[in-house]
Length: 241
Image (cartoon, rainbow, N blue to C red; front, side, top):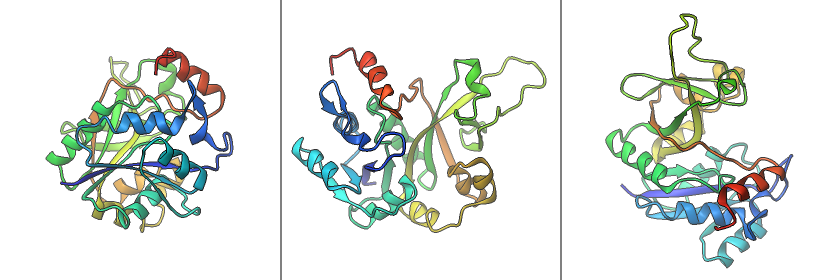
């Protein structure tokens, strides 16, 4: 199975234009992400998929591989689907371009899970430690069956703990691995009813009968959504990266 890591890097952002080029400890964020992803032992190729020449140029300047994609993609999945026609592979891992702390071990775990369930989309979850996150609609929750496949994703507190029994809730992490054929089928499907209600793209997969294998990890995503988040990441890095 030829596995390709794809980092979508869109220049336009309502809250943070040019975000992939923002400096973290003097280095562009996209470089931090790229260097973390290339530490994965399971990826044969890593590419940045961008819609802006400046991002492509910066990636190539630090020795990375970048390809230009259309400017009208609505989602990262759409952008990666375009990549499948330009970079040969069997399985494509979508790594968010605003997660400079992504762990290569998690990427490897996703690919290993894909080898065990080759027809499934693979994603990840982590236990919620802050109880306030359980009811926070910006923190997406996921519930899985006993074999580790997703039953549902929601912005609500699922499952609702009416019994009062001790229960662990899980946060869904926006890291995905797609078999090529499934990815290209997925992006051709119209938005589903539950997807439109929750505004969660992954529900389109569930509603159309696709399986999502969910890998558990201790990693909790630290994304950069605003310029203020840069300082938070720099503190975590300790100025050493």
